[in-house]
Image 1 (cartoon, helix red, strand yellow):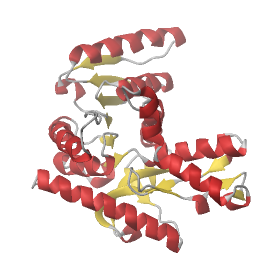
Image 2 (tube, rainbow, N blue to C red; image 1 turned 45 degrees about the vertical axis):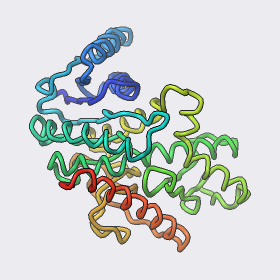
Image 3 (spheres, rainbow, N blue to C red; image 1 turned 45 degrees about the horizontal axis):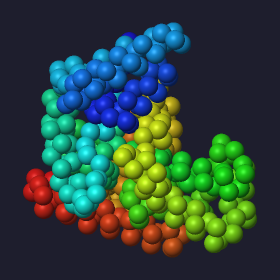
Length: 313
């Protein structure tokens, strides 16, 4: 039976998600947006592109949650991006309101879906989404670690002049300036990264990884990254739909793992047909542990801000 994939938000990431999902023929696509014509226009354009390659995918654009009923996977990109003069708290307050409505509708229309959240500030929004939707924590997850890891991997490949497929790495922690790239858990053709790159150069690459999104915003000026975030979200959806049991860095619910309780943060998890099937705990050095705990503190602080906005969180 064909799977049903709903994309909440038909902006740049939503449209790119729809395109990539149709190319992979992962399922039929519902592109939802409060701006109905935007969703319908993009869905129609992508639908017409499927006949070029003979792809068997149905796409619709809609502003009605009724069309999203009984979705197998829901990927959420709805929300506003920060504009000049807006603080992070302003962004949080606005997107919390949007996510509350989305969460309530997901609960009503697709209570058995696997839900992937891409909306920022990621760790807090995915935590709020889980509470608003009431879905089990293993079925609600945030896309961040794959994106951050892919940026780290790309920058390393450019510096070391090796194909990205020869690099294994991951980035942990919150999706922000305190994220924790893991050079000690990075290999290039099976060799330790420390043997291949000078410390000063590595520090620059780690800093560039943390600011990867901001670098793209600076170039685009009127938008933020969407190709890489969409590709990352699709990898998570595909692992769930095909029960691939891939180990992927995601913002997942922690209940004691890494010494963290009742909080979403970026860690490696196994994604299969039951959603997040396992949190993988890797050994951290003292320095890595310190950085990870610093990142967790930043997530907790922002969550407290969120609770000040909505007492029900």
